[in-house]
Length: 194
DNA sequence: AACGGGATTACCT
DNA sequence: GGTAATCCCGTTT
View 1 (tube, rainbow, N blue to C red):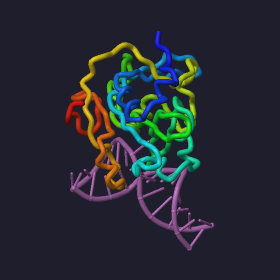
View 2: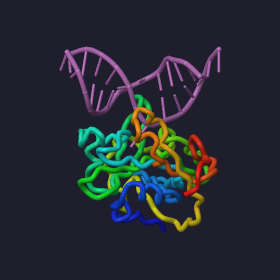
View 3: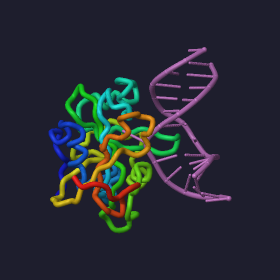
View 4: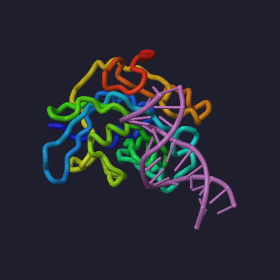
């Protein structure tokens, strides 16, 4: 069966964690014991530490973003535009900020919407809410965790991140990773291979 | 205490 | 192409 990725997976440089999350499976299981919902990650973005002018960590460990500075392997969610929730997985070692925004995934179970295209729709589709902020993704009983199921040989591409034009030179850095050509990817689906 | 904007989406022309 | 919806949070007063 699927077991959560260990904390060591997340305790690495954020761009590497982001790249390696492609193809992994998000598992959402509720406390009421219904069937779990699974979705394969196909698009992510790396948000680095205090230097990264696109990152919520750029202002330091404020109440909202402090979790990005803490131990890896936890869920960081936030509300955006008053409407949508975005989900991130905290990365890099304890004390250094980093998180990976999950932008799109492909559902693996019958009866679920086929594509979760875009970070807001992904959270809505998987039932991830603000209240889930801080969950430990490495605990098997967690309502949300991430697992490896043996998928390999993904065709990975990268590009600048979406929606961060305010970030000056950081807006241009290729910190978005996606499965090239995959129909669930939001925004550009083909750029340069890695 | 008040203000302004956002790691988005859907719907309009 | 443009913009409304809607609220948390960082900043300023």
